[in-house]
Every structure is written in C-alpha cells, then in structure tokens.
Length: 136
Image 1 (cartoon, rainbow, N blue to C red):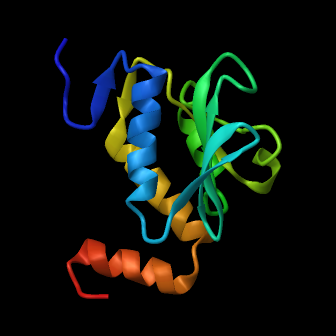
Image 2 (cartoon, helix red, strand yellow):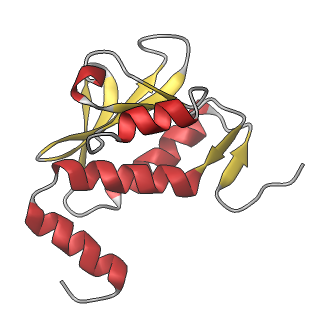
C-alpha cells in the first residue's frame, strides 16, 4: 500500500511529534515549552499540547477549537477524535496520532484553527495574509 499526499502509514510517535512540532512552530510567534511533562505550543496562551501516552496508552494531541467543532468531529470519527481530560469540558479536541493513516493536511488545518482560536487578532491577520500571499 503506497503513501498518498497527506497520509502516513505506520508513523512512529517520534515522527508524529516532529511533524506536529513543525506545524505548530511555523505559525507566527509560536513557542514551545514543556507543560505537565509534554511538549506544548503557545501563542500567548496554549493552542496545542502533545499527549504522548501520559494520560492513557494512546499517542495524541489536544487543541483549542471553536465552539461546536469538538462535537462534530467526535461524532464523525470517534476512532480519531476524542474529548481530552481537563480541557475537553472547555471544548478542546483530542486527536489520536497512533491511527493507521494520519491525514497531515487535516492535522495542519486543525493546528491552524487552534492557533486562530487563541492568538491575538494581529497575529491571526498576519497568518491569513501570509497564507493569501499578501504582505502583512
């Protein structure tokens, strides 16, 4: 079975963390710090945190999402999306990274949306301008 664009089969947790890190740190003024023993990405506030088997035997990440997104994605694919502990009650989404095929294009969209959810408006505008090819 060959790899298609945006999908990876049999990715190791280390590979998944490296790809997630690259997506997060590509965003304007994003920084990484350890929080509760896990890599966590901030833009003033947390927008994504890695969950490398700290809370259960699954590798995942948790991200901020706009209202309604958590329920919609969990309902559409409960094998890939879940309500994470601690922050799930505030609408955050859990995304498993130990599934057979990871759609990295979808992960990139979720990371960008998480960023937009918590970043200052000035940085969101900068991100949107850069993605549209306009000077910020």
